[in-house]
Amino acid sequence: MPELISYAILGSGSSANAYLFSCCGVSIMIDCGFSFKELKNRAERAGADLSTLQAVLLSHTHADHIRGIAPLSRACGIPVYLHHLLDPSIFPGKKPIPVVPVEPDSSYTIGPFTVQVFSLSHDAPHAVNYVISAEGCSFMVATDTGTVTPRIRELMSTADVLFLEANYDEQMLHEGPYPYMLKRRIASELGHLSNTDAIEEIRRFGVQQKPHRIYLCHLSDTNNRPELLQQQIVQQLPPGGRSITVCPKGSLHADVISGVI
Image 1 (cartoon, helix red, strand yellow):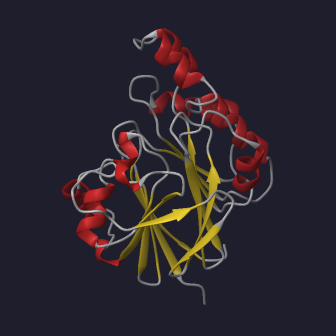
Image 2 (tube, rainbow, N blue to C red):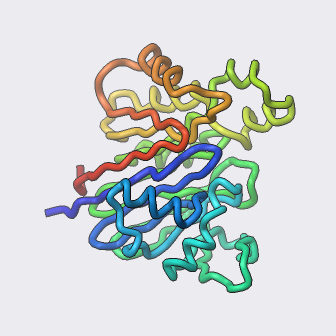
């Protein structure tokens, strides 16, 4: 009988990001942009136990993803997995934290989890993200990439649960308050995926079974609106089929899934 896997988006967006996965009494986390106090609060609300945490995986060095990692590592006594070319001195504090270097297109085992690393197209040094698998079920975080590479697309098509970026609405970004250079950066191939990009990727899946569940994440609170994205989904995607959930900035989402779905 497959074990249950619980997962939670403890937060996504430009302020702070953290994704938590638990199975067989072991938990791992991708990114942590929250203070340890706020992280504990959110984990409790999600019904998660941080005492089972055995590793935190860093995607890239932007503050909303890395800010809380050193305090988390020290508080829980856990290693940080990061791209092998990143200097561990990026983490503040006098006391070094344990690190495990990882390489893109490689896999690692943490308790019941297999962690697969893939490269992103983002304006941070050595940016990566992860496919997390356990009990025959896989989860993929595909945020903070300005373009969907063939490798990312291949991995997305095999994930059971996909956390996909829908950062901005193109018209809102164009007409919004950001300076021109920042707008160019966001819309570039080293920036973020738009609502249009995300919907197009979902459309590519067609009638194939996977992904079973999609969470649209990392929404900008300046250049996007959850209700607008929801409206675009209804208008541009056929009804029925897979589950699609829009995750407003900072919102918390938690669920449980059985292995081999």
